[in-house]
Structure formats: structure tokens, C-alpha cells
Image 1 (cartoon, rainbow, N blue to C red):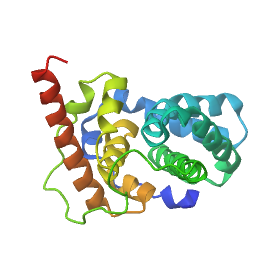
Image 2 (spheres, rainbow, N blue to C red):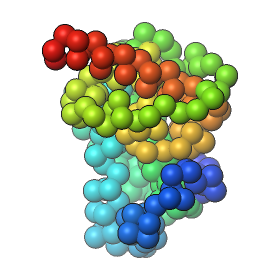
Image 3 (cartoon, rainbow, N blue to C red):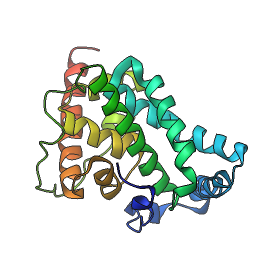
Length: 210
């Protein structure tokens, strides 16, 4: 498991962040403040962390462990609460750190249940060739949550996790790579391929009137 400090230096801010207004970034400021306060034992601040991160975390876990997502998320939050004083980093770093904990708990759960994550390709089989650019995220944004997760679950495991981390959780390629233990270029490639496949699935569904 990666330490909390591993996510502390998140200097590579996503390019779209440079275009956001002060109003757009205020949730990030609020989350960073909540992290600091929660580390000091402020329960209200910890609730802010939970409400900010839990929805995306739960969607991520639903693809990994299905109906057991809430149980795994609960185990993850117990560890997050326990280890929070050791965390060093900003809001993006916290998301990455919390997601890593959740993923580790999911993998433990799958091993204990003798099940495998959704997908036909092991997460270790990632290509190292980076994509020339990231595809538009509209393929996911245009779908309802349940439909999106159902389609993502059809992707190969590496693509599914990359799409979830980049689009659903909101991590950049570097932070996603830390969660998965892979290089940023491999994550970009997997996300690119996954989003293209999702676009194809959407077109097929539209043709079939679904």
C-alpha cells in the first residue's frame, strides 16, 4: 500500500483547472480546509470529506466489487479515519490517497471471496504507449450513473479502472497511476481506449433504440 505522503506532491494540475474561475475552485479550497480540520479531530470537517469523496468512490467500487461496494467503502473509510493524521497533501492528493485505500480494500475483498474484478483483462496488462490526446468525456457524462457503470463494467479491467479514476473519481493521469501502481502514460492510453469503446457502445445502444 502506498503511504499517505506519496500523494502529497500533486503539482501537475490538470490543464482544465487553469480555465476555471474562483467560484469553480471554491469546493477545492473548502475540501483542503476540511482536510486540515479533520486531521485535528473535527467531526464536522470529516463529514465534509465524506460527502465530497464518497459518491465517486462508491461508483468506482461498484464496478470492482458490485453489490458489496458499500461494505468495502465502509472498511475503506475506517482506515481513512484512522490514518488521516498521517496524510500530507491537498484535495487532489486526498482523493488519490482515499481511492488507493478503497482499491486495496476491494482487492482484499475479492481475494477473500475468491472472485475477480469485472473485466476480461488483468489490470497488470497495461500498455506503456501513451495516447496522443485524451478523448472527450461526453461519452460518460451523457449517460445516467447506473447505465454508465454498467457499460464501464463491460470494458477490460485496465480500461475500466482508468476511465473510473480519470472521469468518475476525477484524478489526473499521474494520480491515477499512483493508485494503480502504473505509469501515467499507461493510464492515459487505457482511459483513451476505454472512452472510445464506451462511445462505440453508446452508438450501438442508440442504433438499437436503447
